[in-house]
Image 1 (cartoon, rainbow, N blue to C red):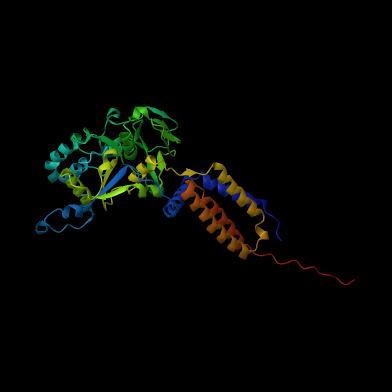
Image 2: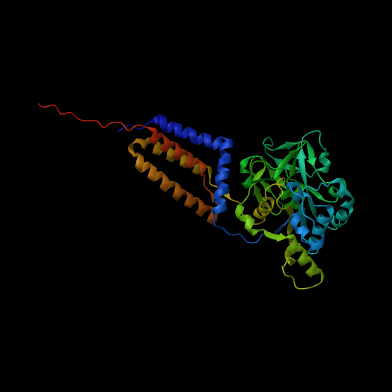
Length: 410
């Protein structure tokens, strides 16, 4: 039987430390987190946020059948709503007087539609708190002075890890932007974006809020001067709410919060608005929209970010943040793997394979239970990586021949 190898134990510890500290490998942890959260069983109360997804087909249904024309092919048609169509949405939403109306698409028109923009402006001026999307960009594009951009004055911590921008890439026309509040919608390119949503950006030396954070501040009737930002730690709102953030300014959303968001189609909203205006009983009860955030996004738009902004808002409103396990948990995992490495040669290959399968299944069930019941996230990529490494080492090793005792006749 082989003796325990201190070198193998040391390699296991070094691999564990590398997994913990390498940002690219931590993205794998986000992928595992997203998958487990999608399969975790949990329930949250309805959040005061409503999402209205609108597509070109919704407006086609409003046109008399004899006047309907076939839609052009291609993806661009999905995002080609005109100012008149946005105005129709605002008019219907205003019937219920929501606290905040947010528009996720960046309102840029085709030249032939600009003549209709005044109709949208007339409706937009009736919205007490209108939030419009703006995309930040690099130097040389549309530049706004820091005075024109909402920024935080109470900021501590290291801003080196925040995405930094010096101009605006895409924004609505000045007439619409001046009667609304800007919310920035730049999205990270990392694969973990499905569970991380930006809360903060750097703009010409200032720290500015993203669209979902700006929506929360408008809903709470607070300003950036009343918010405390501790970079790499948390955002503290005046009402005592705390939003945990990573050092890059992103927040981990709770995917279960997507189910606490009310979803409406444009037809449901228009029908309810007509019934409300005529004082008829509502087929869909939307009277509580007065205290809510109403977000509007385009359906099937490949250029629009994934549908995570409303989930981020619901996560904050329900205080449904998933807490990572204490750092000590990762070290317990590393030291347990190192201990296993010390006795690796005492375990047969068959026993190790069966044990690895049983451990992976059992650990996954524990992770799901803690997520659903306690919103606690145990490291998952780390133990599976260490276990896979030990399994490969053991299976690739040669089994030493048994020692034979030779008894010489006396």
